Length: 207
Image 1: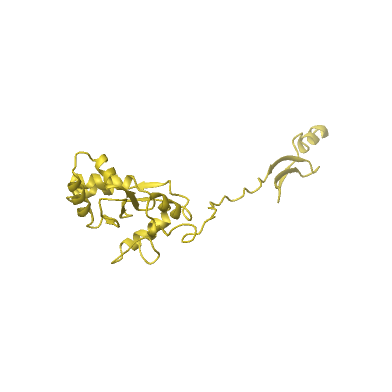
Image 2: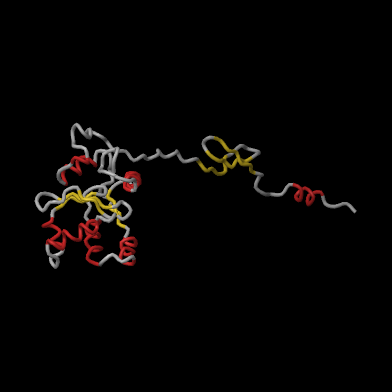
């Protein structure tokens, strides 16, 4: 029995969309009609964004235009010297968990509170430059004699004092393990120096 030719023709030439192929180029991916070459769809590559690199314009020279950090006599001189190569002086990091652990290991509350105050008010890096009057105002319940005694006790590894007199600015450095103001890579370097025997100040050969 012979089938109608018209129906057979319809079955082998369906009225459907021509086959499509994907073509990739430097511009992107294109869906192309294989018979006509018509571009059915496309996904263009986005131009690569410029990589943003943090930069810090240096227009001063430490030791020439500014004092060395270890030679700073007040807060302004210290900030001027450290900000030349550290654009992150606004970043203050305090590890409060480590501070609380001090009390767990027997450190008196008064000593921990003063150490915390120094950590929270760092001038730059791990250095606090202030005065005994400032500490007395922050802790009015403590006498000046008590403040000096507490600072002496904190020198068991938590702080180092450059200026120990009652007159003029007091220069106190705290262990970078607990707090730091500035770039992380500088903190890591100063912490390593802090742990060395007979560590000194900010100078390259010291801490």
